[in-house]
Image (cartoon, rainbow, N blue to C red):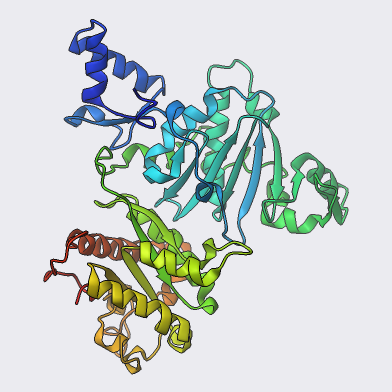
Length: 446
């Protein structure tokens, strides 16, 4: 039954199955408590499932296999690591998924992997468990998030063991996710002050690049052995697990089709688009509506018919985000082809267009965009005190690279953006021709 439902089952149905075997309702609830405490399953809505009338449980062992899109990581300048225990027990994946499953979208959680979205670390990560090679593959842009992931993997590995299996883990580092260097070999070259090291595929690479990126010279240890989250004399709690434990998600048993978002942007703004996409995913993860993917041309592969792929993705989307900048306005493809398709969809069906000021520009000079109201968020909301600027719209570029102490401003921006998108989607009458009158601060429907 659970397998047929792709690893997902309601409490009501689970209790009924136990009752069919002759157990009482109270006994069935005790079995569910045991399954959760043993990390056989977890509640997707929230950790304290007893507060819910009919919670949804996910059984990682019966989750489906991933689609190819799930296991791709296309972000540049990321951290790539292989975590290879001396003994890879079968429960490591199930326990990890049970602990962090609430930080994923439904479409980003499968039997051998997960894509997590963390508000605490302002980033996401892809973690896959290769049962044949007996290793864990981790990709993320965020070094601190990588630390937190490794910390939890080590904890799982050491649980129930009188020895410390985590101390025997072999680590491999990479710049591109293809060429990996064993940590032990790297450390030897660093200590001997050698300039180059050989990858697993025997390619020569520079030692200093790896040492600086993975901060090996700072500690002379793997980042899993000395975490920012470990205090002197005592073990600190893992913020990633605390976030997962406190996370509350919408009901997951409903059959609503996940919505797709298309991002239209100019190639010059690729870096800002990547930051926007990564962060927006995090904040939409806990939204009322389900969002399957955020699509941009980064999904294109070598050999694809790019024009057809873009138009197909646009036609399948329900939300179109315009990242408005001087280069966007100068792009005939963005303001012509892509925007035209969005406007056609808006006339013929309920479609949400969200223009966002990415970089400061005179968008009012564009005949189409000047009729639209951009996502409204002003500089006075973000500690800007200059009286000549406080009533100006806040370009995303001004927030994208703010220092960590001001990360709350970036969080504030995305919370507002995600909420307004989700509220606007709530007002869409999907699948019908009724026109919606109510919409938030940006233009949605004509």
